[in-house]
Amino acid sequence: MQADPSQRDTVYRYDLISCHDCGVLHRRRLLAPRDKARCVRCRSVLYRGVDPDLNRIAAITLGALIIFIIAQLSPIVRLEMNGNSSTSTLPGAIAIMWGQGMRAVSVCVALFTIVFPAIELCSVLYVALGLRGGVRPPGMDWLLRAVRKAREWGMTEVLMIGILIGLIKMTSMSKVIIQPGLLAFGALTLMMAVEASLDPRLLWNAGDRLGAGVPLAQAERDALDNKAPMLACHDCGLVAADRGRDGQRCQRCGCKLHRRKPDSIMRTWAYLIAAAILYIPANLLPVLNTDSLYGNKDDTIISGVVYFWDTGAPELAVIIFVASIVVPMLKLAALSLLAWTAQRRSHWRPMQRTVLYRMVEFIGRWSMLDIFVITVSVALVRFDAMAMMTPRPGALAFCSVVVLTMFAALEFDPRLIWDPIKNKNGVRHV
Image (cartoon, rainbow, N blue to C red; front, side, top):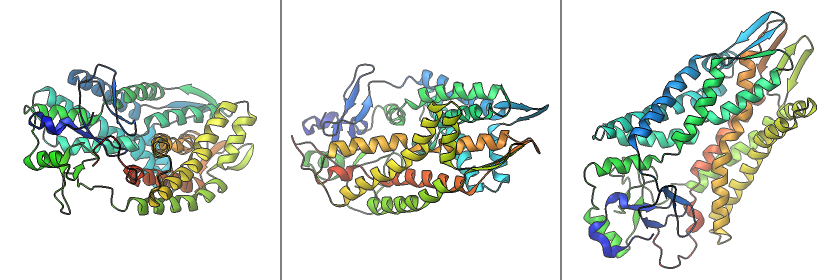
């Protein structure tokens, strides 16, 4: 899997790949379907044995985009209480949150559930159709960069779970009638999962192959032979020689290249400290107010967990407790450990710390679960004098904690874990 300078005449730009987690340089190999290529040092998955079937990609993405539009325009459910009814679409729910003064929260929900998934689907469809026609579509590199960023923040699957939890909670006060929007969101969640299995770098490589491959420039070939410094683009994966100048950009996608993310540890600490400060009011302040015939009640995150536990739904209580309380706390602790050990250039358990970082990246978005439950509840429980739900300041604090911890995870450069570790077996890192 290591780059072999002896085969320099056959090396193309897309043949080299740098590990995202530790920076080791590898040469691509052909893999059987469903096989995985793993890093020789940290064992992270580099790529999978799947060639991009452009017809399949276009068909799946087009289907997901159609369902996405249906899900956004269709009502999710209808609630009925004493002859009155209430229904809402997802954009309608976001508009209600905006009208209730939770503008920052409504913007976050709109971005995570509408804007970023739309960017991902439209961009992949446009690029796949262009490549399918045998041309490299204009703006392809910029759009595929946007796809990678959108996937980091898109939360369709979290929204789906949040809707289901909100509906279960509402069954105690009203009759719940399923509407087409809920079914569409269920189908969209499955199709987005299939679409997300595609690595955008496969489309970049497919675009390069349209020109019969782009050979390494002389600077890259010399750097590869002489083991001189090289840089890897974190967006498209292209490996380039380090020319030793500020502002060097990737020749394929235009992304600014750095050996390591600038001020990674400092930025990570800044986001973590801000999130830790807001974590206290996020759990102490009420996140939702319910005004009904049974009285007026403010709910915190903890009281929501207690409610589901007392009403015979311990599974939901555990889900909310883990997603809304345990996960943010563990993220703060885990990222603090990673930042502290990287800052000290510690040699302590680099493999385990890398696995910990991957876990933090994976579970980060699930903390938004409670915000989505609040959004759905506020939009649907609007029966004037009989029942009304409104968001409270704790929702803003909690949403801020989730966003800040996600920023902290994105700013941390996992390659810093491995920089103090002496290379073994001659592996090459960038």
